[in-house]
Structures are given as structure tokens and as C-alpha cells.
Amino acid sequence: MSSATKKFGILTSGGDCPGLNAAIRGVVKPAFGLYGMNVWGSRGGFRGMITGDGHWLESEEVSGILTRGGTILGTSREKPFKSEKDSKEGLHKPDLIVENYKKLGLDALVVLGGNGTVKTANLLSEAGLNVVALPKTIDNDLWGTDMTFGFHSALDVATEGIDRLHSTADSHNRVMVVEIMGHKAGWLTLYSGLAGGGDVILIPEIPYNINSVIEHLGKRSSEGKNFSIVAVAEGAVSTEEAKLGKKEIRKKRASEGYPSISYRLAQEIEAHSDAEARVTVLGYLQRGGKPSAYDRILSTRFGTAALDLLQKGEYGKMVALEDDKVVAKDLSKVAGKLKLVPTDHDHIRTARMIGTCFGD
Ligand code: F6P
Image (cartoon, rainbow, N blue to C red):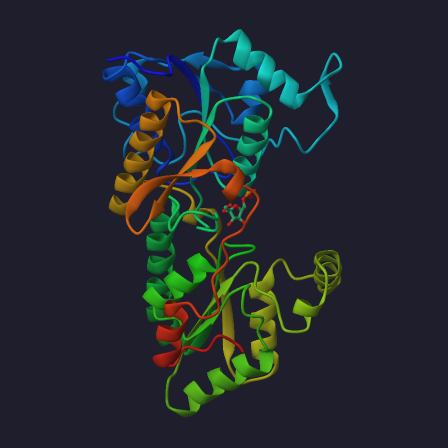
């Protein structure tokens, strides 16, 4: 079968997540099996394209990786356009990427990543490279797609975490504050908070008033509920903080000295009620391990859809999910935009109806 793309590079960039290997497999298996393409795997995200660190993949490398967490290609937070510093003999990083792309004889570059990656992908596309992107992140905050892969796996982990806190909270009559990833968007906290029966859900999109949280916990206690679960996104802010700029918030937090938001919340809860509060930060557990069934399917669908674009020579695109169909969006239309939780999202309404407090 003939194809517009004969040789392409592939890389995974930004924070890892379950489903990256499944997506790599979804792109590379048909590239080898259907079209006899050659695929160069860049090591450590864009870093490999900058330094030339990578290798031509063999078909065995993409076998048996569907269920494996992490990424066989390695990843990094390298942002080639961010630092304008010369990285080698007067050449800046994007130039090095273009140089290596040409040296390797690539027809296209496939990038798997989140917001920063898609932004870089668009800039490389503007610089003349043929780029196709696949949306991954446990944060699900990429504009232009209903769902990113990695989110559902992290959701399962976070939900199980909240589930497990219930019994120990109940045994000790405690308020459990559980911190969930998501600096800017609260998708993971909202979904896992709803799935895990969180009594309070605090997300960056809805600044919280600590008095509302304490009042809600007090009400539960007066109703005879001996424990409570507070699910908080790592990027949640109070109503006072919402009035400040990013830098000012950082300064304020540094002066308060808490390791993260959940510690401050637990302290405030204890200071203003009789409750005993404990903190659990789920952290990188949410990014580790094997992908869920949902993510294995989504990653594979995204991977094969990206390969279709390569075969047809449709570049400058990001594959995306829209109404459960895989579609292609122009990189220029999705890059640099965040998909936040709308405050009228149906899950918020649902949670409110069953008595969940959002701290507002
Ligand atoms: O982008 C995903 C994410 O997991 C965020 O939710 C989190 O804040 C961030 O990455 C932290 O990642 P790292 O410490 O690897 O930079």
C-alpha cells in the first residue's frame, strides 16, 4: 500500500501517564504491518530530537507493551521554544530539531503529550515540520478533545484511594483530606470526588471559602456522620487567593509554609472545629501503573487515527475525541488553550444534588 509518509519520528513529552505505550503501539504497529514505514524513536521527548538521541524502532519493541505503564521512549519536560539559549554552536533548540529531522530523512514527527507538548508541536509545524499530535494527560485539560488518554486510569487510582480512606476515616472519626493532581483544572478531583463519594470537592475553577467547608463538615457531624472526606485539587485556591495574581499566590503560600494545599486545609479544619484531620497526597501514584481498559482502547484508537493521518499526508493536526468519535483538529486551533471544568458542568450539578459541598 502506498503512503504519503515513509519515515517518521515519534516521541513522548511532558509528564508520563498510563496509555503512552498503548498509543505508541497503536501508531507503530500499523506503520510497520500495513505500510512498511520506518519509525525513529526519540529518547526523552524533544530532548532526543535536539541531541539526536534515539534509534530506529524494531517491531518487537512495540509488542507486549499495551498494558505497560510509563513510556518505552522515556520523557522529559524539555520545552525547546521556551529557552532561547543557544544549545550548540550558535544553534537554538528548535533549529537543532529541524536539523535532526532533516538528517534522519523524516517525513513527519508524531508527538504524544499534553498542553506544553501540543504548543511545541504547533510551533514546529509553523517552522515547517509535518507534525501530528496525540492528546495525553491525567489532567484532561487539553482543549479540543473531550478526553485525553491517561485520565481514566488516574481516575481509577484516585477513586480507589478515596474508597480506601473511608474505612479508616470511619474507624477513627476523622476528616480525611485527600489531595489529587491538577494544578489548573479540577477534572480528576471532580470525577474521583464524585466516584469516591467525597463530601467536599474543591477544584481550581471554584474558589473555596474555608468557612463554607467548615460549616459543611460541622453540619455533617451534627447529623451524626462520624467522618468526612475532603477531595482537593492540588491547584485549588481560596476566594481571597482567587483575587491575587499567580506570583502573589506563590509568595503567600511560601510564607505560610505548608507543603501543599491539603496541609493548610487540614490545619484550618482542626483549628476551627473539633475534628481531627489527616492528609493523604496521592501524588505520582496517579500517573503510575498500567492503563485502564478505557485508556487502552482510547490510546489505541488515537494511535491508529494518527497513523491514518500520516498515511494520507494530513499534517499539522491533533487527533481528538468528539462525541465518542476520533477526529482531527488543526494544531493551530487547539494549541495553547486550556480546557477547564465549566462551573455549570453536569457532574457539579449532580454532586450538589446529593449534598456535596464545593466550598462556595
Ligand atoms: O500534567 C500532569 C501532572 O500530573 C499534573 O497534574 C501535575 O501537577 C504535574 O503533572 C506534575 O508533574 P511533574 O512533577 O512530573 O512535573
